[in-house]
Image: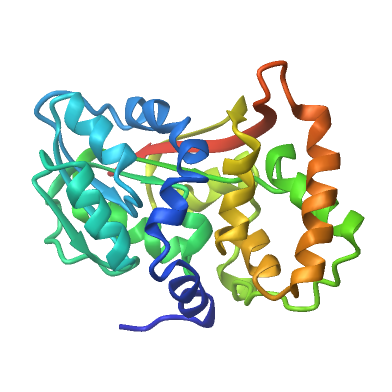
Length: 272
């Protein structure tokens, strides 16, 4: 199996972090899940692959619709959590995109929620999703757009206000494997994979969350802000926390929860 430096970095970043993700950013990622399933026409009797299931949110919702669900993830702690979370799934197993242990045409549909942001070869990943879905079956994917929505971009303001020097940059995608994180760019990726009836749009919402929950994700190493946080000495963490409290105050509702504007791109297509 061939992986890129980006893939290796992603594997290391998520290793053992299923619980930290589930108790912090999983609720954010869950919001587009019903729309993702709608775009893939997931209903009773549909055999669907949830590729990159994480803590099992999408798989659980698909099971609730009466679908026959198989879920995979590259991180063992996620697989273990998803198995407990979604006991009605037909199977939850370890697999790393773009290599899936299924025969061609095994599924009626495949969905992948915020996974293309975390693979070193997005086109190969979409091609693999297309391989395991039968002709005329559906594929639906979500990604975070660029520029980052306010909910995610706020962390950069926090680090700047605290005076953090972000000298450690994670590996990026090879230039010939990257694509614009825009509706046109994501639609173009699905077009390049030879899929048909490609549709792509933006889902916007306000993510409401407890300030401590939003803090806990990066504080426990989740996402790129987590990479920044874990390299800081205690005195800088204190400065980051002070800046966080100050800058998030403008987004606190009267009930004390944060109301953070955010958005995702949702694309879907048919397998020819």
